[in-house]
Image (cartoon, rainbow, N blue to C red; front, side, top):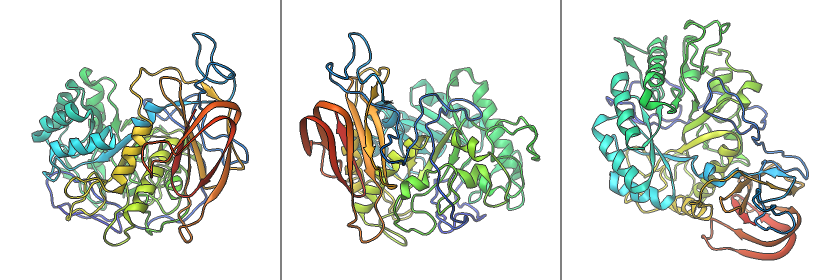
Length: 500
């Protein structure tokens, strides 16, 4: 296969019969100012926000995630039978929800990744979701991977609606289906549908396929509740205004496809964290996940707000903030042009999963599971399925946050990060046993690599036991304190997890 890279915004011809998972880093957008995003519900058409969502406050003394629970039953604890935590404060997000957002792209459908070895790697990393090309011949392989590793599949269409629905039904019957996805990067891999092929002048075949795929999933009773992800890069790259910058085209959008045309449940972008410049700058994961930023990354704005290729209008900034969204490709390679070291990649990826979830992405798929000499050294694992540093660090994070209990209604935690610097962010999670996991991370990547921030986490009142974990050092606590009401941290370029 051919992998298109630098720039991604080209109209090129794929040399494979099925749409490959491709790599995208090019130049298209001017830099702009960032803005914060909120947790959204991806299940509803049209992008409505959910009560209790969270944003990063970025303000002195403010808490950014609504969340948190104190596991004690004394001061700040629960009344008998009630939720554990403080009576006031920030409402936690279930730890399991964050863990369920973590995904990776695989190439089982292309015969590149072996199913059994891939499943072992996925189990080690604690990754729950995979994305792969639509290939009917490997459905049984995906089902076996689900049986052994518990992963669910986001299956790309093979540009045949009937065949795609059949694959989806088989996967769903086995409990192995996450989502159905439209065509991959039609700007790089033309779509042929109903006798027409997309080109540099029209995306009508892309629009027709995406519309019919969504309708077919909606009409299939056995796929009830299964979401459809939009065609990636299609909105930003459409040469004619067929309305692919919308989930449902508004009546007054002025597109060539009629108002009311329904395409997807989720917006879908390829916001590679490497950006178009491959520059390891401060706040890069946070910026790449910004829903309204017109910057170095192919974010939501240039795909669904104001399209980068045709300059077509889509959603307003306010609408983008609550638009249901996923990223099905993002990442950074460790060998070749624009590469960073394994250690740098690992720390970026920890921040990336956290930043994307905090900024409203329901699922984030890093490209890719395993290094491949043809497609590049983007993997969490090397060519022999041994974990690279990123695979190990993600294993550590998912192990620290692991929660096998029955989900409960999250409680509150009265906490704040005092005088929080612009590169420091936090996410409050809660496990089913009532334990809070407050994740605080810094994105201090620029400069000489040795920069740090001193922060104080105000815990509201004295906490019986506070335990700190650092996923870059392992899965054992790095610090345990008793009867403390605040915690001082030195942060650099990766997260720490505070349990209490």
